[in-house]
Length: 262
Image (tube, rainbow, N blue to C red):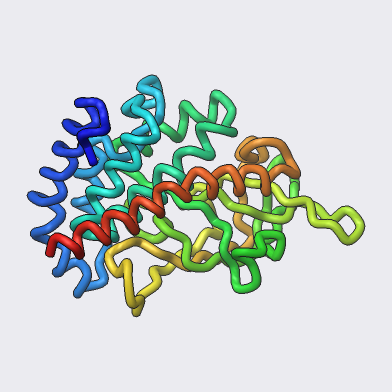
C-alpha cells in the first residue's frame, strides 16, 4: 500500500516500525501480564515525537499531518495496542482540545510538557450514567470566589492515574438553566486539592494502558482553567472525539495487520 504514498510517509512508517519492534515488542507480554502502565515506554514515545505529532513545533510538537499520526498509531498497534491507544488518547483527547480551544496562556503552560513524555493528559467524560449520552454527566463545578469547586466522579479515564498523569480536561455541569444543563470543559491539574484517582485493573484488553477512576471532593481550580467558552463543553468534547475516531480505526487496522503477519 505504501507504493501509493510519497516517500516521506514510507520512511516515517519504517522509523516507527523499527521503534515498535525493538522497544515495544520485547516488553509487551510482560506489561500485559502485570497489568502495568510502562512509564519508561511512555517517556520513550515522547522522545520519539509520538506525543504532539500534529502539534506545531512552537509548542514542542512535530508539525506533521494527520496521515503521519495515523501511520504511527497503526504501526504501534501492529505490535501492541496498549501503547497505540495511549498515543491515540493523549494526542486526540489530551493535547488536541487544549490546542484547539485553549487560551494562549493555557497552551504555553500545558502543551510543551505534554509533548515530551514528561506528562500525559486525560479527557474526563465517562461517568456511571454518562458516556455515549454525554449530556448525562452529573459532575458539577460551581464558581466560588474566582475558583471552580468541583464534585463528582469519572470512570475509565485514559491517562489519568499513572505517576506521569498531569490531569484531565473535565466535562462538567457549570449551571442549570431551567431543566437544561450548562456543560463546560475545565482543565484540572492532578495536584489540585480534592482530586483523587485510582487505577482500573482486571481488564480483558488494553491491560497495559493507564485507565483510572476519578473522584472530586470540593476540588478547587482557578476560574481561568475554563477551556473554551462557558457552556460549550459539548463542542469541545465532540471535537475531541471526532478527532480520535481515525486513530481508533488505525488501532484496529494495526491489530489486524499484526494478527495476519503472526
